[in-house]
Image (spheres, rainbow, N blue to C red):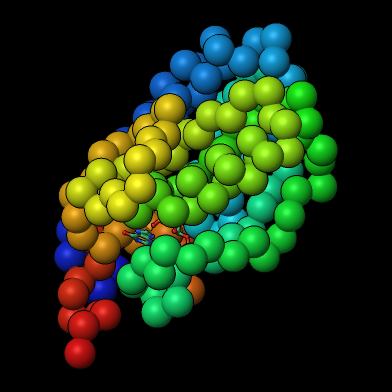
Length: 179
Ligand SMILES: O=P(O)(O)OC[C@H]1O[C@H](OP(=O)(O)OP(=O)(O)O)[C@H](O)[C@@H]1O
Ligand SMILES: Nc1nc2[nH]cnc2c(=O)[nH]1
């Protein structure tokens, strides 16, 4: 285990098994929908690539890049769209794929954006959900794991650009980001 990690919350095997379960549930729902699946870069990259391979229905893959954190560990509440979709979602079902829902600002921003463009339906699948930190009233429709109010890294989640490639979900030691 990486020295900067306080504890492992979910091993690679646990995460992969849960992703398979999510994919089965979502596949039942989307058989006739032909949705646009939209991972939110960069954090969702690892989770989304595994999830999408297990989705058993016709889909288009797109992505957006947004940024909301100005100081690495605190939510600013401001969300910036850094890279837009290349698909027109008017009349399409959209499945947003996130690594984590924290304050909820990012998800609220994307829900509003895709609704304003006439999406037929908008749902979200997030690997992690941290409900203790919610500042706005949004929720993911499909959640891998609920996590405690700690700073999480691995499986796509970073601190200062690091730890994204760790093949497990862990809590970052406070000493790494405090002082
Ligand atoms: O619910 P919220 O408080 O909005 O937080 C969730 C968002 O924050 C993180 O992204 P970040 O902006 O850190 O970028 P990243 O995906 O490149 O890590 C994470 O990937 C989510 O997109
Ligand atoms: N890496 C990481 N990014 C986040 N964005 C919102 N919450 C978190 C978190 O716990 N860890």
